[in-house]
Length: 112
Image (cartoon, rainbow, N blue to C red; front, side, top):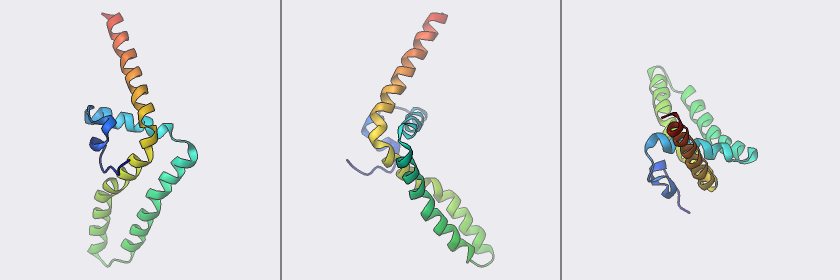
């Protein structure tokens, strides 16, 4: 099992476009048990709090620049944590997504 920085690198998600990868990742996150989800959220929260406390000490306009950098860097930092914590539930999420896709296409066929 490797460490993935983007959903594009995950073998189970390579064949899907970005929007579908995001949906599958959301399904995998929802499949995580509560304790694991809490650990995932804490793993993202603690470093971000440390960064914001460091930004508070910056003088003048450097504070605004630091906040801008933290805001831009937030998803770049948190996405790999969420992605890698969700990996054990990815296969289940892909199966669930494919089942929903099949149900949706069946409904469209019935409407025609």
